[in-house]
Image (cartoon, rainbow, N blue to C red; front, side, top):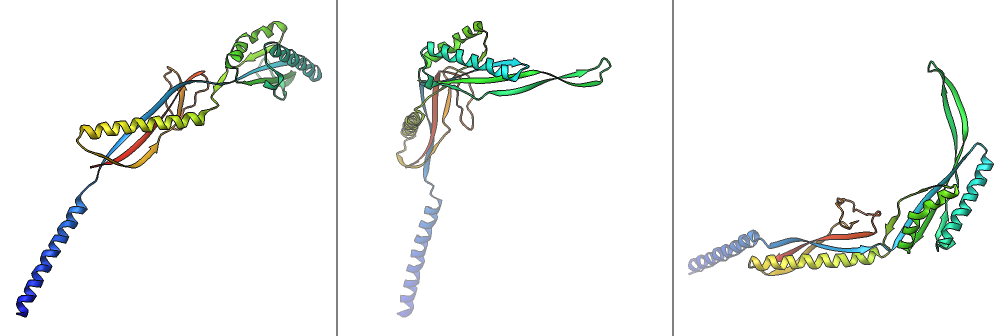
Amino acid sequence: MKKTLSATVFSLAIIIAAIIFGNAVINRNKKAGTIAVTGLGQTNFTSDLIVWEAKFSRINTDLKEGYSNLKKDKTLIQAYLNSKGLPDSLIVFSAVETQKNMKQNYGTNGNYLGQEFTGYTLNQTVQINSPAVEQVEKISREVTDLLNQGIQLYSMPPRYYYTKLEDLKIEMIARATENANLRAKRIAENSGANLDDLITANMGIFQITGQNSNEDYSWGGAYNTTSKEKTASITMKLTYQVD
C-alpha cells in the first residue's frame, strides 16, 4: 500500500513538474510584439524679430582727428535712423575699435627695409534689434543713402529670429506625436494586430530652415537666421506594444 501510494505521489510530482517546466519554456520563448514609428511635426512661420548691423570707419594719420570724424559719422547715422522712425532705444553703437596700420617696405633686391606708419583705422558698429521687421528691412536696403554724405558704411545682411520658439517647439512635439500615433494605428490595423501600451518615446532634433530651401538638417539642429520665412520641424519616435 505504501509502495503504491509512493509511486502515485511520485508520478503526480513528475507530471506537475513537467507542466511547470513546459509553461516556463513557453513563457520564456514568447516574444512581445512591438511597432516602432517616427512621426513628423512641421509648420511654416514668419520671423518676428530682426537684427541688422552696419559698420562705419574712418582712416586718419591723426588719431584725435580720426575720432572726431567718426563721432560726426555716428551723429549723422543716428539722425538718419531717427528720421526713418527708429527710436534711440533700438539703436546700439559698439565701442570704437582702433587699428594702427603699418606698411612693410622692401628694397629693389628684396631686402627688408622696415615698417612705415600709414595711419589709424577706426571702426564702429551700429546694431538694430527690432520687432518691426519690414521697417528695418527697408532701412537696411536704403542705408546706402548715407554714402552720399561721405560716410563709409558697410551694411551687413539682416538676421531673423522668432521670439516664441518654446511655444512653437511644444506645438511641433504634439504634432509629431499625433502623426506617429496615427501611423502606428494604421500599421497595426493593416497587420491585424491591436495597438497596446506606449513603451518608449524619443524626441528628435528641433530644426529651423528657410522656407522652400535646400538646407540640410544638422545633427545638432539647424537654425536658419538668414530667411524671414522659416520652416520648423521635429520628429518623435514612438514604440508601442501590440498583441
